[in-house]
Each structure stands twice: as structure tokens, then as C-alpha cells.
Image 1 (cartoon, rainbow, N blue to C red):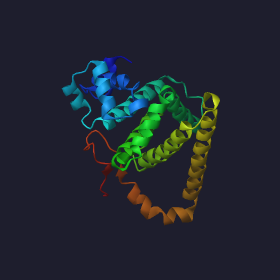
Image 2: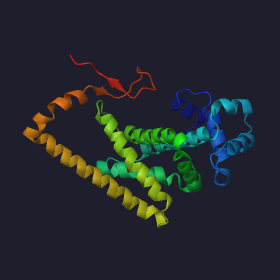
Image 3: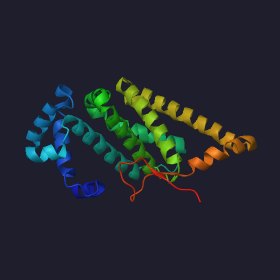
Image 4: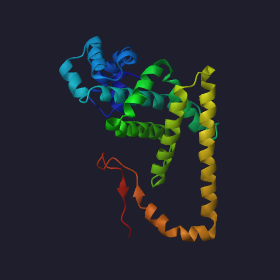
Amino acid sequence: MTDAAQDRNAGGDPLASIRRQVVEAALPHVPFDGWSDRTLAYAVDDAGVDASVARIAFPRGGVDLALAYHHACDERLAERLEKDDLLGLRFRDRIAHAIAVRLEMLLPDREAVRRAAALFALPPYAADGTRAIWHTADTIWRALGDDSRDYNWYTKRATLAGIYSASLLYWLGDESPDMEATRAFIRRRVDDVMKFEEVKAKVRENPLAAMVLKGPQRLLDRIRPPDDSAVRHLPGLWRRGN
């Protein structure tokens, strides 16, 4: 993907190219200094970026640098999944494939990912880490063609975020060849969720259960995912009933 195409994907962000340059320059420093302001300073110098521009691109310093790396990986994931032929796979296998691909991309930067995980485990940055994982789950669902427009938009992403988080932590300690142990772990987690979804489907098919759930279901049906007309920092939309 060209820089111009990436800038368009970033919504025309004039700082997108700067962030990519600085993130790339930062990776050799992260294993030694973490996702810190010191690493950011080294990266800005190595990339030849003006320090005043860097302060605008990364206003919170190292944590914004870590988030920029995470989002850059999500962009690469979306591009890769767009090219992969997944039509012959079961949907659960498509999900497992997407998670595995996301982790494969991190293999050259395992220590940088470990440092990011430690950073986002700190209370001041836990919310940032949660949003980053949610973004990854949203990237995967969009790439797989999710068209849900109700509360399922949220439950799908929340569930996938949980699977991805667990898989990432498992991957950090996996020394098996070609991530074999991690791939098996991902398949088990996805299969467990699919079994739960099958149980939910059977409950909905039960007339008595359907009657009991009718009231809550009407409320849930009013929930809508965010759209371009919504204020972007809000979690979603609530549609008034007739």
C-alpha cells in the first residue's frame, strides 16, 4: 500500500505519514527503552522529523507511539485479509485465520509487543489498551464482511476482543514452531464461543424462552452501532421506538 493510499485510509490525517516514519524508527529502540518518551525522542531524531511536529503527532509521548504501532498493524491486517481467499473456509475458521495472521505480523516485534502489553496493563493506560483491542476486533469483523446493525455489532466485537487478548498473551509465551500451540489455542477459543452461540440459537427457537425474552429483545433491538453521522466518541446509537 502506498503512503497516499494509507493516508486516505487514515481519513486524510496529515500526520499519518509522520506517525508511520516515527513508529518504524522506534521499533529498534523499544526492546531497550520500552514505549517511552526516550524511545520517541530517539525515533524522532532517527526519522529526521521535526520535534514540534512530533509533539503534535504524539501528544502523550510514548503511549501514543505504542497506539500508533498497534493501529499500523491493524491497517496491515485489513490489507492482508482483503487479499486472502477465505470463501472456502467455515466462518469460525475465518476468524481463527484472521487472529493468527494478526499475531504472525507481530513475530519480528515480539519484545515490542511484550512491552506494549506491560504498558497497557498499567491503570492509567488500561482504557487505551482496551480501545486498541476493540479496534483490532472491529478491523477483523469489517474485513470478514460483518453487516450487523444492532446489539450484535457490540457482542461480536466484545467476544472477539476477549479471544484476541487471550490469544495474544498465550502467543507471548509460545515457543512452538510456526506458532502451532497458539494456533491450536485460537481454534479452541473460537470453537468454545461457537458452541455457546449454538446454545443461544436453540434457546431462541424455544417458544417459551422466546416469549420470556420478548421484552428484553425489544430493548436490545433499539441499539445501533456508531455511524458516520454520530459523534465519534460516543459508544453507539439508541433508536426510539414508535
